[in-house]
Image 1 (cartoon, rainbow, N blue to C red):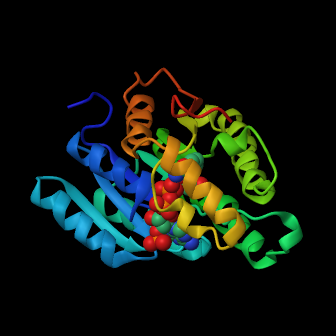
Image 2: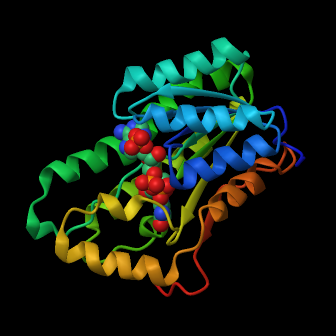
Length: 248
Ligand SMILES: NC(=O)c1ccc[n+]([C@@H]2O[C@H](COP(=O)([O-])OP(=O)(O)OC[C@H]3O[C@@H](n4cnc5c(N)ncnc54)[C@H](OP(=O)(O)O)[C@@H]3O)[C@@H](O)[C@H]2O)c1
């Protein structure tokens, strides 16, 4: 078991696939209790059952992170059930990339609602608990696209730049409460994320790019485990990683 993970109560949004699912699996194996929130709760229930069969503790709750009261209910249920929350991983997100001139305004709204407001709602839901506990760790998921912008992913990048900005503000503000903050910015990771691209001209090159360079989702889970397993007086604030093959 890795120090700093065993017996921790960890809430993960977006755990029905990809980075969130891989993280739930790794942390559960390392002895954490995982509380998982997504919209496709059937997938989560199967995952939670599997983790329990292997000796872990897991709770699956229907949560749409764009609905503030649902995110609050996820955190409140975690605390009511297990007595506290140690780590909040604001991971849920989508990436329907397309050039701005396609005017996919509904997708812009959705990315802002999930990738940005969903993270804010996660912070709003967990902060009162962690302030009361005078301990905790908030992990937000940005992206290489939170460091670099290019044609076709302006809005996605805008949400991920924003996640980095608010994570840095959060880091400075929560010092009095002994709360750690980490923002993780992955490069291309093989998940269902490219499925959210609806623009046919954008979808094909993204799939080719992912097929050529993407690394498995446990890369992210290991980054989470690294940040969590540091001594309590050490706060890993930023992790940026890419597949070795990824140039951008
Ligand atoms: N894969 C990459 O290359 C990569 C790189 C950098 C950053 N990221 C970031 O990593 C995070 C996870 O993405 P992923 O790659 O693991 O993609 P994924 O496999 O598509 O997983 C996305 C997860 O988010 C959940 N989700 C989507 N909308 C939601 C909502 N409104 N409320 C609650 N959950 C919601 C999905 O579950 P439901 O559909 O069941 O709700 C799913 O579990 C995202 O923030 C993404 O931007 C990914």
